[in-house]
Structures are given as C-alpha cells and as structure tokens.
Image 1 (cartoon, rainbow, N blue to C red):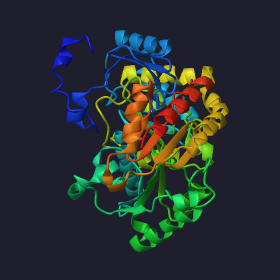
Image 2 (image 1 turned 180 degrees about the vertical axis):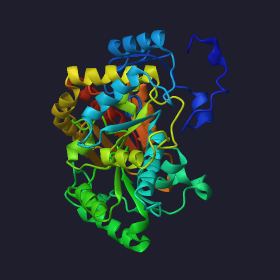
Image 3 (image 1 turned 135 degrees about the vertical axis):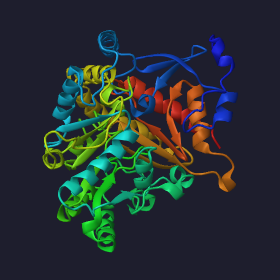
Length: 440
C-alpha cells in the first residue's frame, strides 16, 4: 500500500480512458521509474514494455533530461510564444526540423498529439484558403485510426467507441477510407503485409463522390496504435492520389515519430513524404507535455506570404506552446537519441523483437501477431458469448508478473523504450507466453 495519506481518498481524480470505479477498488500506482523499469507503491519492479504510453523512447528519468528541465525551470519558468519568444523554442524547432522529411521544416508546437492533429487540420484549411480555394473543407480519415481526443481528431478518427458519445457534435463533411486490418489475407505478417495496396484506391472513389475540389486533406497514421501496418505500396498510392488532386496528405506520427520504426519518422522508414506531419509523445521522451506539427515550407510560405507583414498569419495557438521546460526536455531527448544512436539501435533490435513476438504463434487463442520496428501486437480470440475479455485478463496478469503491456479490446500491444536489450525482450514475451497459456 502507498505511504501517502492523500491517497486514502482517490475520488477527486477523474482518470482518462479508465474504468474509474474498477480501478479505484484495486489501484495500480507507480511511485518511481528509472531506465526500463517502474516501481509500484508496494515496491514491485515492473518492466516497461510499452514506453509508458508510447512515450519514453530514451528510457525513464534520464539524468540529461532532468538536468535540462531543472535548469530551464530555474532560469525561465514560463514565457509566452504569442508575440514573444525565448531561445529554447527556436532551438527545439531547429533540432526537430533537422529530423523531419525533406521540406517539412516549419514546426508549430502544441502540448499533445490531440492538439497537434487539430492544428494540422486548421493549417490545411488555412493553406487552401490562402491559395484561393477556401471551398476545400472536407477531410478524409480511415476506419480504425486514432487521431486524438479533440473534436477534430475524433471526427477524422475511425474508432467507434471514441465517437459514439459525441457523434452529434463531430465535424461535418468527414469521410473514411476502409481499414487496412484484414486477417483473412494478412494474419501473422512480419512487417508490411504483401496484400492490400489496392485498399488505397478507395480514396479515388471517395474523391469522385465528394468532388476533389472540396477536399482539404487526407489523414492517416502510418502505423496505428494497435500496430496496423500499411500494406506494401499502400502509402505510396495514397501519396500519388492526393498529389494528383491537390489534396494535402497528413501523417499522424504521434506514436511512430522519433525512432519507433528505427528511423526518425515513419515517413523516412516507408519512403513517403507527407505535406504535414504530427508528433508528440517521444518528442521529449514523454518528460513534459509537448506535441507539434511539421509543415512543408511551401505551406508555411503560402499562408504567411498571403498576409501583410504586420498581420497575424494564423489565428491559432496555445498558452503553453513551446513551454521553456518542454522545449528544454525536447532538446535533451533529441541529443540522447543522436548521441546514443537509439534510432539505429531500434533498427538492429527489430528482427530480434520480431522473432520473439512471433514465437508466440503456437499459444492457444492467438488470432494474429503483427509487428514493425520496435512495436508489435498480439490479437486474441474473443471469448464466446462475451464471457470476459482474454486480453484484459492477460494485461492484469502480466502486470502482476512484473511486465507492463498495453491492452485495447482483444489486442495486446508492445512498444518498449529504445534502450531495451535482448534479455529484456526475452523476458517480456516469456512472461506473456506464461500468462496466455494459463488463460482459458
């Protein structure tokens, strides 16, 4: 049990995406973290197999980030970036820009991935208006994709549970391409499936139905949080179609940015360059809330040059955009990624990670295993007649056994910090195997 008396009453914190009543009956509380591990309130060591929440790519409590944040806080606790600035904001933007695909060198900072997505949608609308095509107000997303909890992100996202309670107030003129999830053809794929590039052609039908001159942008996550990996040629086809019709292509890289696939971005990994790219989470290894949008310079120039020099070009922003401590953490994290060659490390470990997760194919009730880079998912057969959720049970039992994984629906997801070693990869999937064989 925790030693903090304040936790005798846990009722005041309304927890996000959580069954609050169930959690507070048997809470799982973290007290500290270092490297690859958390420690709970009762002293249990937990191996982090999901980088917190796809965030902690450099590992927990890195001294370099702690020092940078402490120094920044002591020197400049806050400075607005509306009509003012501070050096750390510009330095962080320059460092991020150097990792982005060619041309995407204008960085707009936000405080989360949800804000980054809504910002990208606004930038897309502003760009077309500046070009004299203000009628381009339609967006196209994809079934099964998650783009945050803002109204823009929920609208273009394709997760039914996230949309249901708010369906009457979502953005109008939104369409969705079909999901790329197809177990009949792609079950147990290693890396990109060979089947499914043609699914991108559905975009042509949506464009024809809606009139291409009305569509502002298409947004997809190059790899989704449930590790839905794009089929070979799929992203390239989306790029061809959007470019042909003057439609912007947005990559939501909130989970793939900064090394998850062994490159700085999924765009680099797949060899496809979007017009806008959203980021968050690992931008500063999860240390301080931060996100951003990388915009192609032509988009920035079109919007900025379309106004008088003394006028505000984009009526958008946040109180905490490029907060000094967040920017300091980003600079420190990006230095760690570079100095320790963590992107290269992820690429080298990816085949080992792949073999380890696919070794569980023989476990009962495993319906699919899919992976790319240092992320993977195991999809389990649902129990008949809705008699409980195997994946939820596996999540709880893995935690009891000292391994933190992610669970959503019937899916277990894995995305460890990039500092993981081979022995820890083995421990993760050996633990998962032991747990799954005991679940009926």
